[in-house]
Image (cartoon, rainbow, N blue to C red; front, top):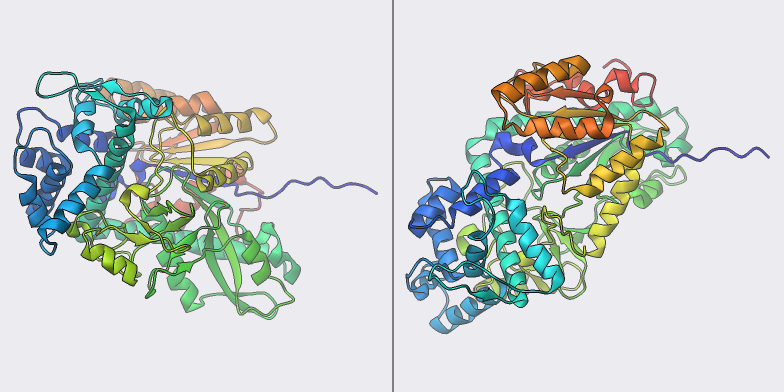
Length: 558
C-alpha cells in the first residue's frame, strides 16, 4: 500500500499586529508608553503637571484621578495627605473602609519604589529612556529573587527587597493598561472616523474569508469537516496587549453572522465566521449577559462537530487563528483555580466605553457594571476593578492580568500562554507569508526571530515578508529589491532615527532582501482607497501574487 505524505494545513499568511498598527487611532506604542512613564518621575515638577504631561490629555477628571492614584500608591515627591485622596476617590466608603482599601492597594502596588527604580534606569531623559531597560531590571531581579539599591529623592540609597518587586511590577502593568484604556476612550470620542477605516478593513477580511469558503467548497459535504475548508488562510498574532483588533473582528463577524449573509453546503445552511484563540479553550465573560457566566469561543473540535454532514446544526462554520502570545489587558488569571477568563466589555458595538476592564478607581470604570452579588459587594467595599472568575467565582483584580512584558527575561508563563505560544509556533512553521504590521521584530523577541529563521532555513518553500511601517518618506505603495536599497540610503540621510530602518534590517537578516517588500505609507493607508479599505489592496497585502500564484488562497474574481 502506497503511503501518502501528511502535511497538515496551517494559515499561509501570518499577520504580526504590532503597536504601530493602532498608532493612527492614538493608542500608544512601546516607546511612547516609555515616554509617558518617564514623565511621571521628572524631578522638580509638581505631580499634577507630571501626570498631565504623561497622560497627554487635557482632561481634568483623568488628571486629578491619576494624581490621587499615585499619591495613594506612595508618590515620594508629593506631600498631600493621602486621606484626602481616598475621600475624593472613594466618597461612599467610611473612614475605616477607606483605611482597609488603602492597605489593600499598597499591598498590591508600590509606586514609590517604581519611581525610585525608574530614576536609576539608563537613559535619563525621555528621549533616551527605554521601557525595556525597566522591564529587564525588574524581571532579572524577580527571577533571581534578589533585591537591589535604587534612587531615593532624600539622598540615601534605599534597598528594595525582592518581595517588593512583584508589587512594583504590578504597578507598571496597571499603569500600562491605564494608559491604553485612556487612549481607547479618546479614540472612540475623537478618532471615530479613523476607527471606521479599521472597521472597513475587517469587513474586507470577512468578505475574503466568505469568498474563500465558496472557492474551497467542492460541493461535497465531507469537505466541511476538513481544515482545508474551515481554517482561515490568514492568522493574526497580536503583539499588543490591547484587544482592539479582536474587538473589531468580533463585531463585524457577529453583525454578518446574525444577518446570515451567505449559505453553503447541502442542504444550504448559513455560513458563520468565528475565532480560535490559539489552541487554548478559554472562557470569555458574556458580552451582553446578565451574570459573569462564561461564553466559549470556537475551536477546531467544535467546528468539526458543527460541520459534520450527519447533523443538521443550522449553520456551517469557519474559524481564524488569533494569538495573544504576550497576554491581553482583558485577560484575568484566577488566583484560585488558575483558569483564564477574558473580559471584552459589557455591550456590543465598536464605540463601547467598556471594552477595557475596570481599573482600581471609580473614575476608570468606563461602563463596567457588577453582574453578581459578589462583584457588587466588592465594589461597595472599594474594589472597583473586581471581576469574578467565570469558572470558580473567585474575584480577580487588575494585577491578575497575565501580561508578558517586553523584556530579555521572560520568566515563567501561565500554562495558557504557553499553550497559545506552542500553537502559534506550529502555525508559523506552516506559513508562507509574514506580514509585519507596525511590528519591528525587536532583538528581545527571540522566540519569533528563531522560529521564522528556522522556518526559512528548512527550505521546503519560499518564506516571504511584507513590512508595513510609517515614515515621512513615503514609498507610495510597495517597493522591492534595489528599490529597498535606494530607500534605505535615503531614509538614513533624511530620517536616521526611523524605527523602520531597524525593521528592514531585521527582515533582511531573516528572509534575505530578495524575499521582502516594504511599504512606508503606514496603517491604515496601506489598505485604504479613499476613506475605506479596498478589496484589491487587502488581497495584495495578505496574498501578493508573486508569492501565492496558483496557491489555495487564489480567489475567483469578485
